[in-house]
Length: 491
Image (cartoon, rainbow, N blue to C red; front, side):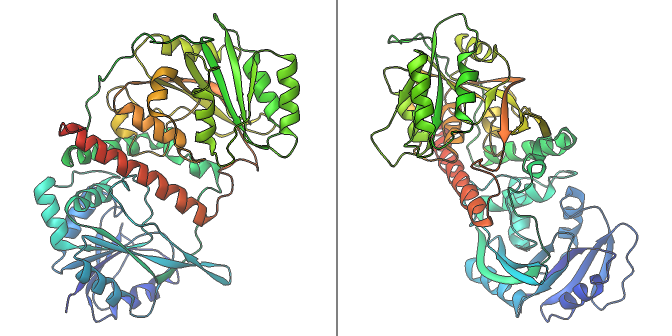
């Protein structure tokens, strides 16, 4: 019988002892290690305390792996009560044995008041490399796989935050991380992804900078281990081989935004620039009165170019392609969402000024988060300072986005185009361009991003958030494979 070492954190709560008891009475359990900072006293059989920091710390994981004498190690994370389902530990071990996985994790139930809800997780793939990937509260590791990975790819450093991230990335290189699509335990109520603006941007909080630097260092080493790391200093842009009708175009894809699109277009038209520009609005078959507003604007302002796609199956990326590949597009294409605003009349000039340097195929600015009335809301300035000129093209594969507003050298953008999707199209094109070209960054706010109930990412359900996360993981998988091929000289 394959035995388990179980690791849990101590909680001074009434349910804590009962939670430990369910692990201790399992015939699979050899020992239960309770992590604490001085407040735990062992009273249950098989339970022993270990005075250490959080499970994600490098020193903690080193000590646990040294102490484990079993084939499997179960890490139980989180701050809430966990209740095992029938034969849950047996199922964890059986699937780990069958799949020879380096780690297995499972779907679970959540308690919401008096209700129990299903919490589905995503399958792990090569591109599931973001440090926030959701494994739930229970992760069963193969101890031999963990030790082999650390021997081959290097020991866990004494990270304060990134130890667990380091361990699972190293294991994942040679062993699958397997998702059990069964509800093997029940946890307390958890916040649904996407419902809290502050939580959504938590990784950008300056207070978390030290943690982010650790994660970036771990991830960069992972890319080197798998042959997907790229050095900076890639292609420079060239003078255009074709003529353009204007120097710059502000591109606004829109569908059913009658309450905001007029302000967005006005924000673009009031920009002060040193050369001609137009505003290309792609009306994706609006039905709420947006079209009439845009037609009136195009009648009174010659710089407004109103495009209506013939196709009815276009996402935001497809609408971008309509603008970028049209004869109206300028040498530089600059983003403005239909419910957002530039925060000054010099924003467009600032962005294009960086593109004109010839150093970059794409430039990304920074923005300020505001409510629909224009009042700043947390976290305020979103500047994505995790991007650096030396390692941004690698770290981009770890994070969820690169910021806004985005602007492009049109001639280069036309060589790759946008994906015809309405989520992640900007991230996909940034990854693709960064593979070959430099991306410039402006860390001052150029843009007001208005959060309101109509935003496409407002109040996402768990299923929607999972789909979005899986899609971005797939983009990362594709990009990692492409970079591996490029490094081998076959792309």
